[in-house]
Length: 447
Image 1 (cartoon, rainbow, N blue to C red):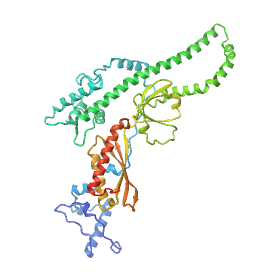
Image 2 (image 1 turned 180 degrees about the vertical axis):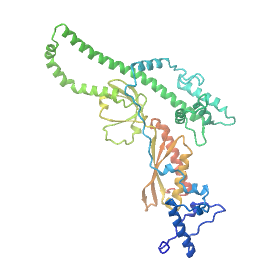
Image 3 (image 1 turned 120 degrees about the vertical axis):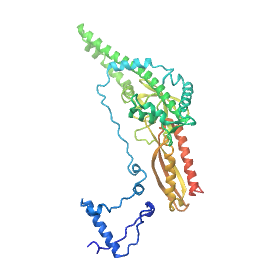
Image 4 (image 1 turned 180 degrees about the horizontal axis):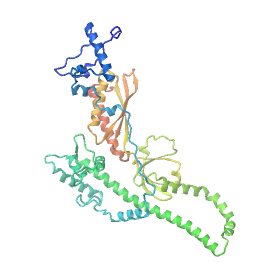
């Protein structure tokens, strides 16, 4: 019955398969009846195999494809074919995990931290940024001596720090080291990359000390408010113990309290909201780059150009520095309660957009595939900068001008906290896209 059905030769893409000398390429034109019968028998045999009925005589005659053919049929990166997804963070059990003793030990530990040698004495002195840069360069030169004849530092030398005395490798240390020192495609680190990583740790450490000191100031202010409230309640209790009725005094002052509530009620409400923002929400720390939107629904248009650096935080106000011009502004914390605050430092990666105007010949033959391949190769050659491509899609086609408009979105490992570096990497990628278009002859002449 199967041989009587209309049969159509399968479409085989020969360029996607690689055959060895022992194999014979399949023919696309099966015209004889014998070949058709053999094909039907093979299809029937495949159905039996799927059902679990294997013929012992046919097992020995089954032809095994070489590994080169199997690998050629698989996509270059299976992960790229799937939807992009990030693992959610597992939140530890924080209920009851911090005691007063832990807080006291933390403050005592910060007192013993030596600011002149924050990394170690073997690293060198790093009391300020200039000393840190000099010590980092000296450390890099000492480490490169372990790889004679190379001006680059092999990442394998740094990986030795993730192993214990027994030779076992700590996975957590390895992940942190990869996050800090991101090697290039060849597994090497340049002097600039090494010093940049050390500088990032140094700045985070300085911001940490500044945040701890600022938190102590806020804690003293909160403690003062609590002491005032406690003292007032204690005063009422003492009056009650001395047989005085404190409520008579409060009722006599009710008229004054009502009048004052109308006068300063909104101000007190804003002040309380500001205290809750700083003590409970904690949307930023000292040194963070933030963007403040008027309402939670305002879009972040040109957000980086309108960003601020947090200079100081108190219980009632926050001091900000405008990133573009360096102007200093003091904003009440109560006014920040109803705004949307975007913390660019807490955003681990940045996504950049590049608009490209290309010739319509990009859609001819293999130009589009080759152009996308060049971009992918460029991204993969700098793994310490780029994490991957989000999309590369056509936004519009203008047949009158003979151009196509494409948008490229790429994930950068540098956060918008360091906007200068992000814009520098974006400019390099944009120049490469234009250069690749010129090499393929698909650049737009009139754009």
